[in-house]
Image 1 (spheres, rainbow, N blue to C red):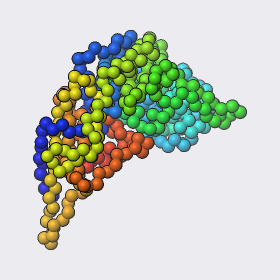
Image 2: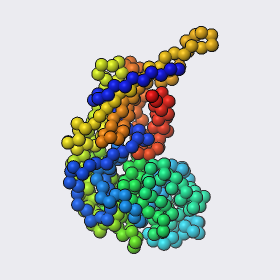
Image 3: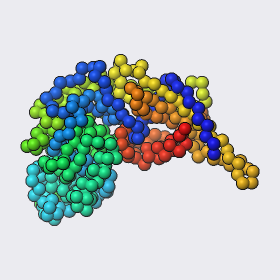
Image 4: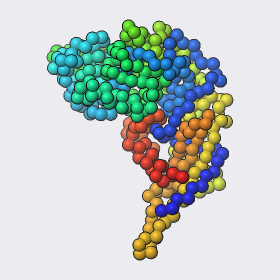
Length: 395
């Protein structure tokens, strides 16, 4: 099969953000919010764009924010109805605890609630041993996931976040990890829960957990994520909130006034960087016979909305002659005609497929059915599209 590539530059066309694409960071053209944090970051969850950063790449201790990684690795590697047993090494773990009994069994789902709502260190160790075979095995999975997502300033030594040499991350990396995790519907549901009860096999009463994250009660639209504290890391917090269909996540490391600082950071993001609908699904592309396969939204300040550059790449797939001289259909794309790329500030921030008019356009998956990662790998759906685009649309 011969592929002919035609490039048209400068068209106002939408893009579809794929997980393999890079993300951009907002420029300092707008005065950011003041915080008391040693390091801070604010990210748009849909796009993965960092909207605000204060010493965002400074490597610091992160305390129980570690459990964001613990939770997403466990969710991706195990089943929610798995029974997790409390081993001697998990029992009576120092620091915050669910006070699980030695030998007690609990479903992974309920243990994840205890992990994220009450920051149970015993739950973290039990989960790690169940999923990874040992804490050491689980830590390997954590660091592998960090590498896959592109967390270049992070390294994990344990699943709970107790102070350890070589265990660190940054505000920017934690923001990217959180945006990745919030695309997972199980993780998203757990961290937004204020109160949860779970069966107690040893007592007549149930476990009852109240979320330590006060942002769920203090901030309108808050829906996550995790608190953290150790004597060396000090107060750490990741919060998220959704307004007008846009979800933001804020991170502070070593911040003695984190509740108020997070409210200011989230207000800043919603006010100055709203999601802008660049285009709608099945929008005709001017002067062509193709339509867009997806709509696209991107967080943009008013002064940035004319700074997007677009490029349309069309593919012509021609039949290939077979051994008996008969034309063979070698177009496996079912109407896929090319892609449209968007660049912002010199970075490729998205790519949307285009289809021939009248051809079948695959439906966009629902959130509960697939993970649409903006900055890392994730769903089989997104992975499949990466394969399609790389094979059919490469120059």
